[in-house]
Image (tube, rainbow, N blue to C red; front, side, top):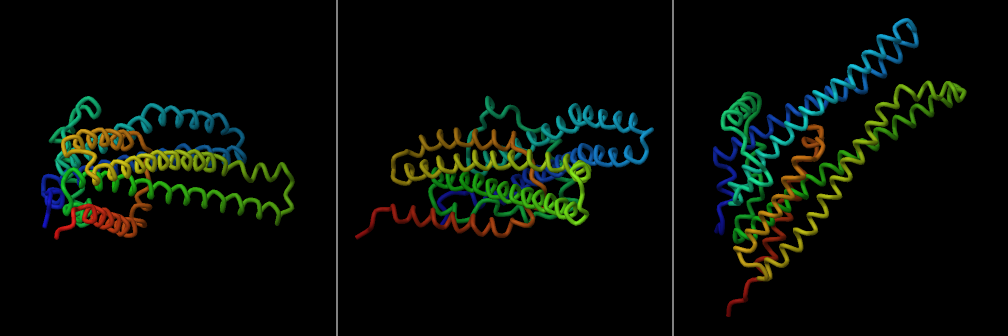
Length: 305
C-alpha cells in the first residue's frame, strides 16, 4: 500500500518531460565540455608538434593558443555553466512536484520557461525513449509517510551523484598514471637524456594538468555530497524516531533541497559514458538502500498486541 504518491508522480507525463529536457540540456553542456577539452588540450599539443618541424609557424601557433584561451573564457566555459544551472533548475522543478516541496524562489530563482522545456524535451524524445527516466526514485519510498520519503529520495540523489563522481575521478587517475608510466618506459627503452624525456613528456602535460584539476574537482564535490549524506542520515534518524513533526520535516527538507540544488548548479560535469557504465549497479544500490530505510521505518512502528 502506498503511503505517498512519489512512485506515481515521478512517472507522470509532465514530470517525465522535466527529465527529458534536463537530459537534453546536460547533453548540450557535455558537447561544450568535450569541445573545451579538445581545444584547450589539442591545440597546444598539436601546435607544439607543428612548431617543432615548422619553426616559421610558431607565431601562428601562439596566436591560435591565445585565441583558444579567449574562446574558452568568454564562450565555452560560460555557456557550459549556464546550461548546468538550467539543468539544475529542471531537476528542482521535477523534485518539487514529485516530493511535494514548495518552490524556493530566493535560492533557485525563476523556473525554466515552458517553451524551453518543450523544445529540449522534444529533442531528447527524437533520439531516445523514457526507459531510463521512469522510476527515478526507488519505488520503496512510496511505502513510508511523505515526510520520511522525501529524506529517502534526497539521500538517494546525494549517494548516486557522489558514487558517479568518485568513479569518474578514479578513471581519470588511472588513465593519468598509465600515461605517465608509458612515457617513462618509452624513455627508459630509448636511453633518453633528461632533455629528451622533458620533450617527450611536454605534449602530455596539458592533459595531465587537466586530469589532475578535474580529479580534485570531482573528489572535492563527492566529499561535499557525502557530508550532506551524513546530515541526511541524522535527519532520517530524528524523523523516524518522532523527533520531527511532518510540518517541521517539510521545512527542513526544503532547506536540504536548497543544498542539493546548489550542488547541482555548481558541480562539474561527468562524461555520460561513466553514467552508462555505472547506472545498473547504482540503481541496484539505490533500491537496496530504500528497502533498508523501509525496514527501519517498519521496525520503528509500535508493535500491535
